[in-house]
Each structure stands twice: as structure tokens, then as C-alpha cells.
Image (cartoon, rainbow, N blue to C red; front, top):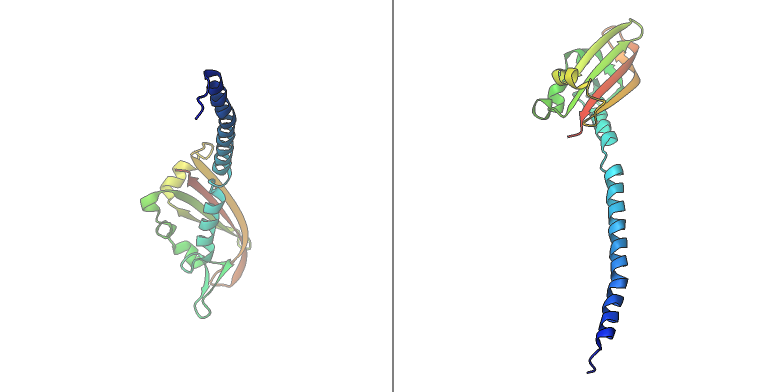
Length: 168
């Protein structure tokens, strides 16, 4: 085997590093770009969390909407006023343990011009509603037209939902 001279050894080492260092740098830059994109886009679950909470309010059989026991169907556009008055949403969302979600539901009867309120974790809501300008808390407000089932029949109404979600 032929032994390389010092000049040939230096050239071989430089050639080795000249190819591999730029390739490694390119891979590191790609990794940083992909991870920052995932963090900014995919890990933000604000929309997902709010949709889960809305579905639990409107599509749960033991929530505020009308549930037909015969067919097993829920009508999410009809709010039962008796359930709305009597329900404690704290137990439905397990907020006593986690305190990760708070909210206020305002149900306005457009025909009688009456407003009813329900809270999810009322103490935390009164505290957190002022903190939504900080990054630690998200605010979500939704407004829907609904029918209100009362003892007299169906009335037109609007439900306004205001959630404050903790990002922790």
C-alpha cells in the first residue's frame, strides 16, 4: 500500500469536510424550519379545544339542548330553558379539578326580551376574563340563533357563549 504524502493527506481531509459540513448545515436548517412550522401551526389547538367545548354543550344528552329519548337524537338548535336554568356546567366539564376552562352562556329570549345566564367555573371566569390580552389565556366568543323550549312553546332566541381557555 502506498503511503500518502502530508500534502495529499491534507487535501483528502479538506475534501472530506468540505462536502459534509454544508450538507449537515443544510439538514440542521431544514430541521429548524420544520420544527418551527409545526410549533406555530399544528400545536396551536385553540380551534380544536373550542370546538370540543361547543360540541359538549350542544351535542351532549345531559346538557342544555333538547334530547329525544325515544329516538335518541339531540337537537342542537333547540335549548331547553328548564335545563338551562338548572344545569351546573362545572360538573359537566370537571373544572373543579383542572380549572382549564371557564365560560359564560347568555341566552336571550327575543320574544319576551328576557336574558338568562349560566357559567362554567364562575369564580375563575370573573378573574380570567380580564386576562385575555395576555398570551397565557385565549378568548372565544360564539353567537348562535336557537329556539328556546319553554312551558308555553318554542321561542326565538340567541345564545352567546364566551369562553376563556388557559394555554397551560
